[in-house]
Amino acid sequence: MTGQHDTERQPAGQQTMTATGAQAAGGGGRHTSTPPPADTAGTADTAVIKTEIEQTRAELGDTMAALGTKTDVKTRACDAAASAKGWIDDKLTTGTQVTRRRAQQAAGKAPQAKHWAAQAARAVRERPVPAVLAAAAVLLVVVGRRRRNR
Image 1 (cartoon, rainbow, N blue to C red):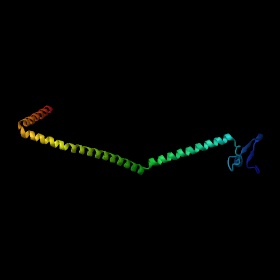
Image 2 (image 1 turned 90 degrees about the horizontal axis):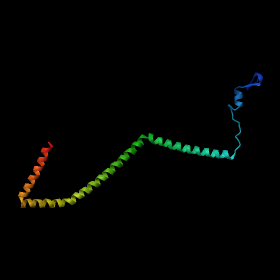
Image 3 (image 1 turned 120 degrees about the vertical axis):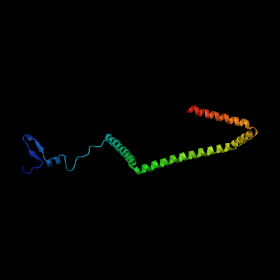
Image 4 (image 1 turned 30 degrees about the horizontal axis):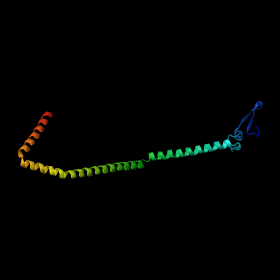
């Protein structure tokens, strides 16, 4: 083997590749092949592939952003606290509105109740016997119900 690095002599005309031969055959070193001739179908395929790559990159970016959001514990805790605060504010507002409405209803009924109490007091002063009998009847009903429940 004098002076040959890329092939060895084999019987019957066969050659074996060495490291230098592999590089020359395209297995290493500089790639010197020429690109295939451009045609319209190849250009369309290339555009479709580029579009798909851009879509995949956008989806990957969205996925990474979603993962980043899910792993950001501090932000998630702040969002949960803000949501709870909003819920509590809504409940307080609703409760306050209901309380005001009921207070107004009670205030509207107070003069009427006062009038009924005054009429009842006047009726008892004028006729004490029927009032005492009515009170005794109510007392008997209450006592009777308590004895049944025992």
